[in-house]
Image (cartoon, rainbow, N blue to C red; front, top):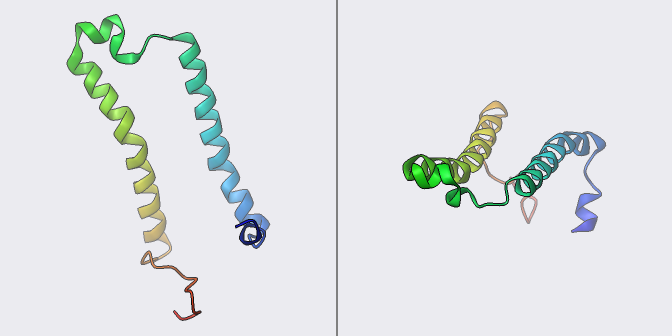
Length: 94
């Protein structure tokens, strides 16, 4: 595994750096929010008063990030005219 990572060109590492830093920043924001609002989302007073809105928010928090990632992957596949198949076959055939 470590040997295969060494074969990436510096441009690949630079391209991976932005999303990795964005994910790290988002994680830091979530940790900060957890420290500021220690009561779980669905146990807060507004969520108890309007469970439908709280459930919709919880569902969006679960479904939106993977949906955005899928949209990003599909957009890149369309842009590069990629069929999704591996270009590095086990026996070198294409």
